[in-house]
Length: 162
Length: 162
DNA sequence: CTTGACTTGTTATTTTATAACATATTCATT
DNA sequence: AATGAATATGTTATAAAATAACAAGTCAAG
Image 1 (cartoon, rainbow over the protein chains, first blue to last red):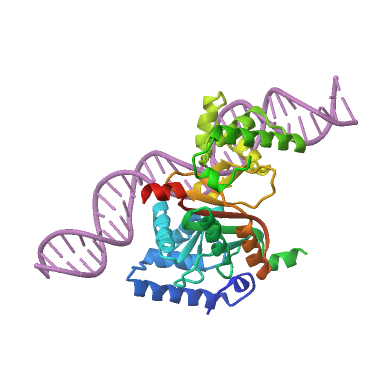
Image 2 (image 1 turned 120 degrees about the vertical axis):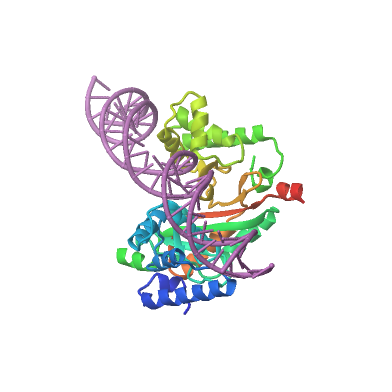
């Protein structure tokens, strides 16, 4: 299953969506020899519960509900692991984290953040990143990482409001 | 004077650069009927001292040195004013602020952030923003604001390291 | 000269993130 | 199994970034 922006921003079988992404993540950790420990797995599941980005302390609250200690490093370490290995993304504008919907597929995501329903989707294609690379290249700047984020209104929320 | 990425990332007459930008900012506040009060003006001057982004508390330290009270809202309010009126930009990846080098010129800046010298430049052109708008438009997402930021190495620092 | 909008002063608190170090677990190699 | 290196977790404490809330002052237009 392929989860793209159209899907994220509309009603869909989220149980299947979450399940498919989780399975994909599991393949990846297996292939890469990573350890998807209980906290890490649970953290990923928490992020996958919705397409909304969650703050670290929100994740922590839910980890606590699953029996883990209420200590910030617990959440931050798990989140950092997921981000480092491409299983989650950090959304800088929101100081929050969202599950990666295409783990394993190399990509340079640009995020679309709906400020009405708070859903976060990865924009299709790599055109935005490509444009950034080109703009940087033009002045001799070498990019290591980028954050490409837009805040606005998703199709469903536009319609609901119109 | 036009301050673009090439200039920011190389040695230049920064006194003139700062002065020109400050004057431009003053024209804008005049035209728009805004009040560039002492704290606000000093804050802009502080940001203009270099092409590095400064955290709010760094700005606050320097405001204190100029006689203002050491209280976070003092800095945040001035910074928010500058950002709201296009005289400064917020760099989300750094939790920091940088003076706008093209105040008044309508633009959707993409930032190039050198992680060696910490200089921040606005990438030339609007191609990155255009690509973002196109990507969003393709899925029916309506953009209000965006953060387009890349971290890497500027030409001078690449060379110094090579 | 007063009304209303904007600006500043000030105290306190909230939210986000990391430092530091002890303990435990895992896994590859003896 | 025993050992040791790397990795992961537990825990305490603190740092860094941002905002809430409300009182008091300033300013320009009517």
